[in-house]
Structure formats: C-alpha cells, structure tokens
Image 1 (cartoon, helix red, strand yellow):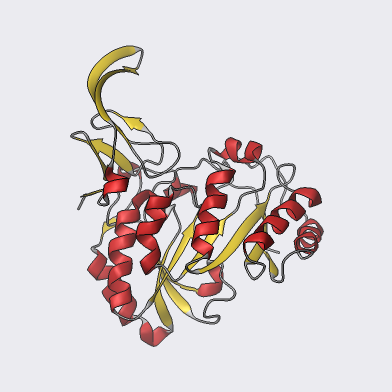
Image 2 (cartoon, one colour):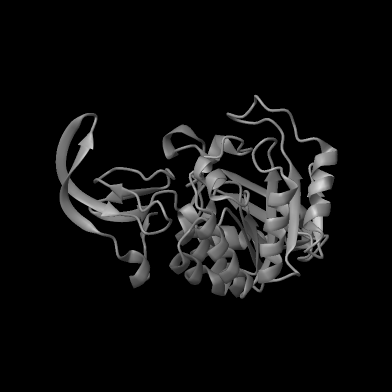
Length: 304
C-alpha cells in the first residue's frame, strides 16, 4: 500500500519540468521536492530520496515503505530507552527500512541503510499492528513503539497505525532522530504519547558529518516537549562529541526547554563503518553524565 502526503502544507511538492544530470547525461522530466525533512530531495520520476523510503511516483512524493515491516518485537519500555514512561511495562516495537541520516556507527544499519529490494520485510496493515498490540496486553504490552529505523521517513504509516492504537486505548511511542519538518510533527502529535529523540551532539559541525542539522532537531525537541513525554539520548563517540564543555552546553540548553527532560548518555561500541574506534571508556560516560547533571535532574547512563 502506498500513500501520498496528505496535509496540504506537507503535500506542497515543487513539481517542474527540468534538466537533471543522471550518470553524466542530462534528462528532462517531472521533478518533485520531498518536504518531509530538511534535505528536500528533488527527485525525478522513479527516483528515491536519500532516506531510501520515499520516492517520486508519477510526479508525486509517496511513502514507498508503507506497511513494509522489517522488525517486530515485544520489548521492555526501558530498551527504547524510556525511564520515566510506564516503567516496567512492555511495548510492541515495529520498524521498517530507511533513514535520512548517515551515521557511520548505526547499530541498525542492516535496515536503516537498506532499501526495499535488499532487505527482508513483511507487509502489514495498520489494523494488523494495532490488533497485535491489543492481543499482547496480557503480556504487559501498553501499545506500539515506532523504532529500529527512522520512522519519520514513513510517517504516514506511523500516523495511520497510531490513530488505531489510540482507538484501542493504548499508547504510542516514537523513537526518532528528530530530523523532520514541523508540519510532519504536527500531524503526528495528536497520536504520540512519548518520544525518545536522538540528540547526536551539540555542534552543527558534528551534525553535518551525519547529514543532519542541529537546529532542526532542537526545533523538533522544543515543539515535541510541549505536547508529550520526551526523553533524549546522546551516544558518546570518542573524539567526536565527548568533551565536557559540549555536554554542559547541551544540558544547559535542554534545561532551558524543560529541566524535567530525561537525558540518556550512552556508550559507543564499534559498529557499521566506524570500527576503527574503541568503545567509549565507561568512566568517560560517567564523567559526562555528571557534567550534564549540573543542569538536569534526570541523567542516566546506557550500555555501561
């Protein structure tokens, strides 16, 4: 099932006949600009965006990974991680493929960096996910978490499924990198009860390395924190975002949004394309936790 972007302010895609270089040759066709994230990928007919989940189909940007489930598990809520949202509960966790960032340390790169044709998936309708979540109530399940890959790359499926989950009186959790435009967030907020948002670091330079924008994520966090429970995660990568000064700036900013926001400071392990680094020293993670604790009430370590 494929859906088009629905809201008027989101569905405004710039469409034009123009020349675009392809393999050194110039071709003329209908180009459409995807409005979901700051990359605003301009795509020719049949071309995918950098996320691998959205494409131009007949001049319109559609969600190509709609309902294509690559991962499904009943997880402890703390694994998202969420520490202050229904602790001790379980949550049905669902993921697809695709991501609009390019983190070289991604722990789920097999699906986040995958495309439809090179990863396994099962087609599931929103009703199937919502029904399965309800069936798992007896095992302590409180709802559905959209996670594993970047769920906002296919936000239409999140929206449609989350609405049905709410109708069944259950909760929705979004685990995201926060690299999306606010109209997308606004469409989801009525149905999302909690988020864990990656705050990768606190410099634009670092975000540029990952293909993202710090200011976009900050704007996303500010808006989300007004409407639902928000916790943040910063993975500490040696030599990249591990200075106490940067962590203090980050924590001070988070406190300016809401000093009750939970921050998870987590330990890096070599993964994907960053196997040349050693795992973060445990004492370093504790040191940065303490630095963040100068401004925040709730700072937890992870992977230690």
